[in-house]
Image (spheres, rainbow, N blue to C red):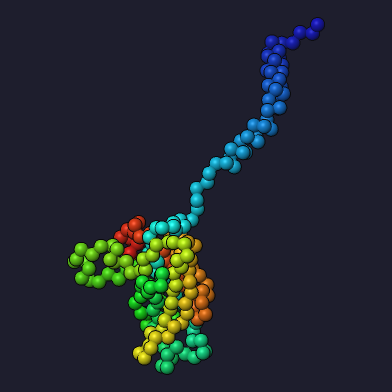
Length: 204
């Protein structure tokens, strides 16, 4: 019988052992992989993006930006002098007008911040809630909000456009809507949680 060196015998024993272990593990490989894949699929994933509003919770709602068409519904200039419209908007909720914005003069694109802090407010104990210039609503079923945009005039204000928004579809962030109503090119609706506003939010 042929004799092999001791080192060769150890190599042979090692390779044989590896082969036996691999053969024994093969029947379990597929089930284990399937179990691991199933566990990975069941692992909850963190939600992405800004949070959605919650029913029966209170929020601030305002227009951060509005752009209107360059001419009115009759295809005429907004003003007899040829200047742009003087834009402001209202928010209606549950049959009531609950907010009216300041007026932005002679512009097709108007922007509003979350606040309108006066110089005197800096020396008084003005709360964050009092500084926020926005509508306050409770998200509730069958209680849409209505946004109405006007051109302010000396004789009477002209309505440019209006549209309804289901509050439950909103998120706590800025959301842009395109052509929400005739006369309106686009608008940015800003939503803030009423009980989670910090000082940094009022200077946006």
